[in-house]
Image 1 (spheres, rainbow, N blue to C red):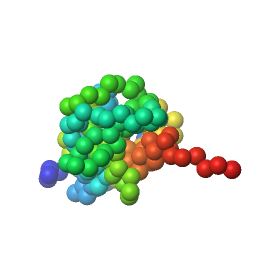
Image 2: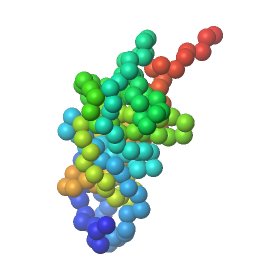
Image 3: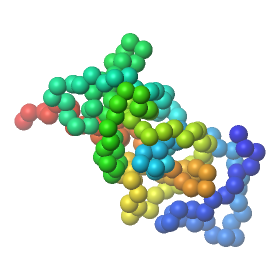
Length: 175
């Protein structure tokens, strides 16, 4: 962990502290797993990211809606594999055996989300807010931005994302 934090310029539209306010350097208390999707950095709080896996061959689920790509075997347990890219404003891409995936788990919801690659783990204090009109991919599921190198990663709310993925295959209550 670094001894000092290097300040970054805030993203466009983010609130900026007045220049006469003294800078406070603190030790970050949160950690995020940073991955890429179509070259865009996304982050998930490590408390919601169980692990990164290389997918086994998928088994199709007859009649499953589009986000559910299939199920995979994870050490003897059945794991749903769901494509989140379209919900994040990105194009879906083929997923094959050996594709990397980030396993998200919040409460009783769990699924593997295919990713391009893992970038690493980053420390952060409090996510920076997104501007109301932010149109970056994933903004609808973001809880803010976290510093990542000289840039920012979109911090995803894994619970909201899993709920949205599940909503398309949840049974519809009859009136």
